[in-house]
Amino acid sequence: MGESPGAARAACLAPAHQPLHLVEQTAPATDPDPKALACYGLLVQERTTPGVSQEHVWLRFLVARPGSEATSAFLSWVCAKLTAGGKTALLWVWDTASWHRSHAVRQWLREHNRHVKREGHGIRIVRCPLPRKSPWLNPLEAHWVHGKWAVVEPSRLLTVGELVERVNTHVGCPPEEPLSLPQKVS
Image (cartoon, rainbow, N blue to C red; front, side, top):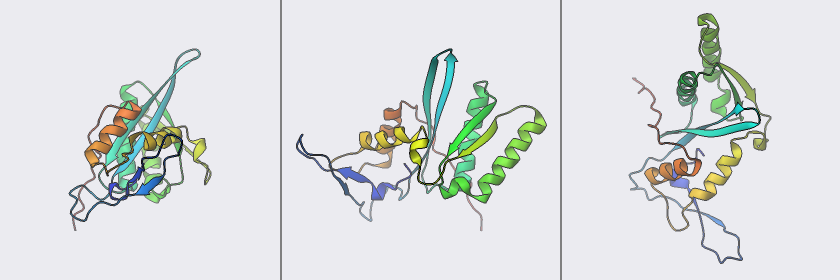
């Protein structure tokens, strides 16, 4: 869902017997909304009693393009929430996005897991990379696909606030503060 609001797509209105078609809409140059919005998500699947499982989607938005720093910040947030829930490990299903495979993220994961092992507590992260061009193997992908269609506006571009609200509502996720990245000092 890391698409830019400026390049968001909207469905054309079509008669009931016709399929909807996507038409690219562009934001005017004077649009005050940010030019990029990324959405990080985690599908939490857990078994509560024998045969009963629960799913929750955790989302964090970033008013910027996704990258290594944002991925590490998201992972830190996820680990804090899982620790608060009494969990000890996370099986993380990754696609092949460059910010998931980056040297910085792999280094963050190594250091994080070493720290957890050394301290004897925390969330151990087991990375499960997906093969290229196989998004259907990621259980969260169905939520993304259906979510994009559920939040689309047929006649206009959505503002960043509207888009965030619609996505959170669709997946049943309470709104969270957007991820923030430290400002780079030159």
